Length: 581
Image 1 (cartoon, rainbow, N blue to C red):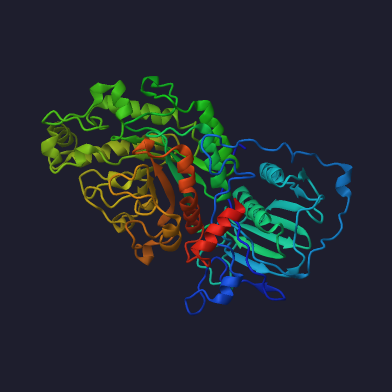
Image 2 (cartoon, rainbow, N blue to C red):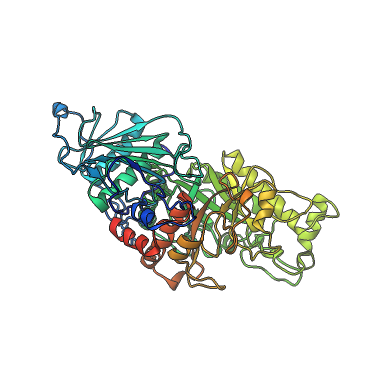
């Protein structure tokens, strides 16, 4: 597609028919009523809030392993013909108020009207005259097994358009977030025709996901208007491909699922102590087998772009570099007692910095996303009781470089500042793990960067509010909810979708309690990611991982799109996942 925007998929949930006459569904997406509780009448009318990964049409091998399910129909590429002037008969559906859309994540504003609604017929086409939307049109046409046309739109058609501007916030339903921005869209079903209008291409794509899932669950789309947009701009999935190999086909299958969930970021953890799993031309000596070729990466990035998903590379340093150290043992950090902590390079050695910078620069163009992750976590020299005593060489270098008050944490902060500068030189905004951001110190972290907060177990144990008060934007990867660690070591347990769905929000950054309200907004906590880590790589097959993360990832997508209390129960959520999958 040539665009690197994020894409996600809507899900589907069939709701009960509403009352006669034009109406707006209060509580769509689970907004509490005046008493603060979702009442029974609201539950009947609420927009579906269950979330599910789509595995069948348009989603690839949703539950599977390495098969991926990459094939797509050739349908949907027909050019306009004289027959396009034919006028299909008007819709024959009942003149009634139909159910709200079945979408995952649930739509945030639905205004129902009396009328026949839309259903796919033998006359249905996907129509657009906007060049940048042709990819969206072709994809939807393949999924619905209909044709593409330049129009004009007629009865039975789906028209895709761009407004070129953001909408104002929704009125009349107590919506607390702007239903605008580049990922917003409006979907109108009227008199047998659907029109999807987005502020940008991504918004239009999300509208097609809402339509597709509702069609799968209900086989039609009721008369009315959807106004929808995500609460958080960053909504993603992080995958450790270093400690466990995941094939290109497996990753592409997840990309299709992510697109249908309206997730817009895929973070790939490329290097660790166990392996470096991507082809490198600057340092082929560090590359492991199996690994992704650059051609495979380009294919993944292209597929992701077609779903408006940005692929974010992570080359973690100065810890987690065991694969580099196997090829360059002279870079190994050594302590006063001869200890050689696993994966830790000697940050006083400029050769270590050069190798990492070579890799960051090499992959900058391969991954054209705005963000790149520089790691920074779990540097073993800082995880001892007395770092300066255990690693006197690093302590001496810190004092030489930054003065008598400097410590090893200042040398580590300087290391990460230099890696961040390399990424910025290549047009990237750096992201780093929270335990690479130390309290106090002589050297301060450079800006701009974002903090990926994952743990409260780090040395120093800094609360999320510290980063937020210092003005850092935070990406939420709360390991108490969002970490799927293979083999469940170190007191980790596999997260459940139910726990995420019922208890987690983007404001719950550490543990189970949210940050204070003044820090909870999207301008401070910009989003979150569900993460898979391969600590004990043989604990599950890739197929088992795909099945195991299906509901948790879907629940994460729901709460990043709309963090309010869902209007549907967990049981209803699970049923919806099965209906739209």
